[in-house]
Length: 145
Image 1 (cartoon, rainbow, N blue to C red):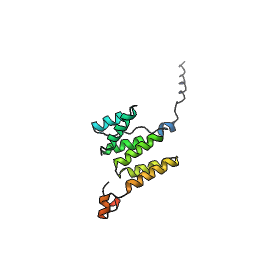
Image 2: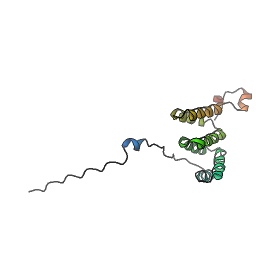
Image 3: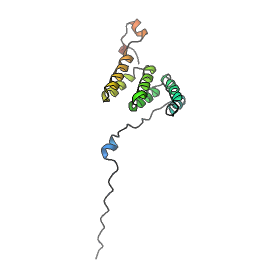
Image 4: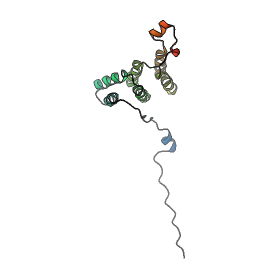
């Protein structure tokens, strides 16, 4: 008489639902290419010393690197309270119009009216013409970012 096949044991219940796996509550850090100097500053920014964090953030904002802007926007997307205000100022200090669509996207996704207003205000500020553009009669969209 052939042996009956055993039925497999039921799979354990997942600890996270598929929806949580696809859209986690906190977005994951994006992979960003940074030069060694900016990568070092980013590591110092993620430290615990507030003075060192502020100096590192200033260094990142002043670097002018596209990867630095991506880092700032990524950090801003998860920041709250005073940290969000500090990061938003760093994005403004970076001074690139490439941040405008990202800021508007974050504003649209924000449930906090104060944060939404600050993000839109920062985007509007970055959209203003530079003195050079103003003198030449160019609109900001006519100039390169």
